[in-house]
Length: 412
Image (cartoon, rainbow, N blue to C red; front, side, top):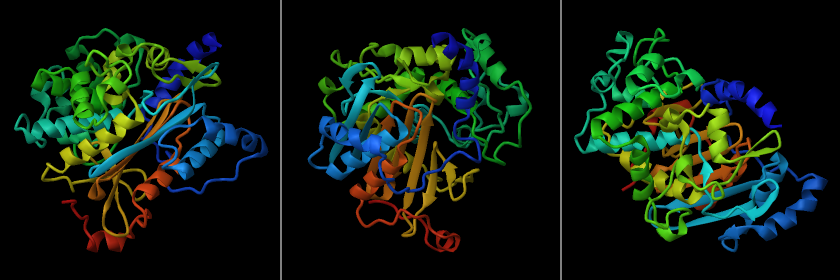
């Protein structure tokens, strides 16, 4: 099986490299819970009984999470709801790794894939609010080696995927390159469009953003993201796996192998370390675009920080059309306007062996994170959690006429 994984890894890496770029990529639509099959029904009650966390406060969410896990053959999952004005809640069910009975806990870390981009975006906006950079200024001075074809691109265009950069999948020949050589490699192709003209999702944007922000601030990319994660955390560090020394681990290399959930690919468990080696060719430089390893609790709290930092940008309503109907993109998040004029922000992470969703209702100070150690997004559970956290809110998108006449509100 390992030899099979090695053989298919390059293709999987390429497929996962642009996980949100395809017009066919599923966007969040609240689906109904399907009836469990007979086999799943036999497994449902044991799943519910083994769930941990705030199970007494969220019994319907526990049942729904187990139903969705069983339908999708997901070994384990964790869900967290964070509120700006109240306590967080979280649940977990299933097992950390196939072949090991250890359960998933609310603080079990998972790889979150491209949601790392949202956290990197929050860090960029935070430093902009401190006067360290101007989002609409050219970024080329911080990216020596950048092709002249991209000389005018701005920080915001990197954030919004509007630079025109095509994507570059992780490949062995890119490992070990200096920052300058990597910049040359990522910007060697002609732009797909004029800077600012069109949204084209590409990991390359956030790899370059991470290098540029690290150069401007003198802070490593992993620590830039760590600042956002720890700023939003209400969890005692003693409850965060691996943080006993006061250092909160957020990337694969910082986690002991036995702590995070394993990803699962065609029935084979992969540690987060093996995941990086096989599916990203061991490319550490991909971290700003998809390398963070967090618990659902950490991610939901970080989502509130993300919304808070985005609110500091005077042009937060400057969004661009995406290839997904009804969704726009700005500052590292997909965004849409709901029927009542409020905002719903979203980003997914899909690595093939892990799946993650982050949903934010910024006007209500609510964030929901759902993490799974299989390849299927547990989107029904995410929408059920949003409905639980914001009862009575219509999560259907506003019609075009309503979006034009009913601008988003701002949470006070």
